[in-house]
Image 1: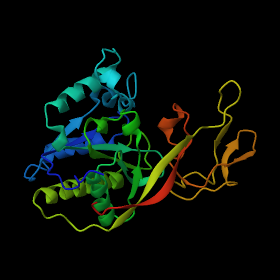
Image 2: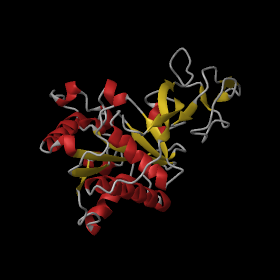
Image 3: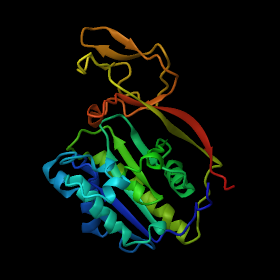
Image 4: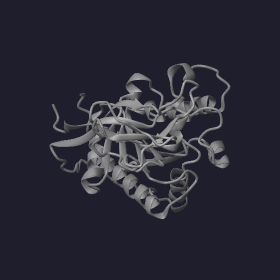
Length: 297
């Protein structure tokens, strides 16, 4: 990995409303702007409401998932779908900045029992170190490592090498919960603090290694020959995100009352029964639990 863990970040942008029915981010941004929360921070902190139209309508998106819209063909294309146009507008917004010195914090919420999850989408040490710093201060936080942007470059975070997506849950769509709002504030403040300490050369000491959950595969819902759902997530699996799932454990319950047992390799499921993933035919995402060194090569 390239040794950029403590590169001086010149600007931080906090993004909310990438999904319009996830309300924690937009209301965090509104409060941050009204209170000038980061006005005197040593690093410039900006905010961005990513999909105002979807937020105003309380919908995840208007035509297409914005967080799947940052592919090269969309960013240089002329597709008329609302989110594709929005992705190009956001890309142009960020292109005016020095992206090699820009850190993006993308705020999300989930209906799954994910607690505090920090999603690292590439192998930049800075991203992993920022997540480790949050975990050091909030031990129950977990780090999810996804290489989606190195293979598909679809998320908003793919606009810069530096950034994190923050997921908190469980929370229903279109809802603001006081406890999870405060959690979001605390996590964002820690990320901003970590990056600011790096700028002032007061880098905090981190552990030698950190445990992460690395995405392995998506597990689909059981369906019949016509593509109709024939089973739901089993009650014994529901809400057991980040807990070991082994072969033979009930994973689904058919609507006729039978159990379908997991028959894959052991792992740690996440985003179990996430509401937004029904349209993507994902019942849960299986991960492997691994330790990654934080020592610089």
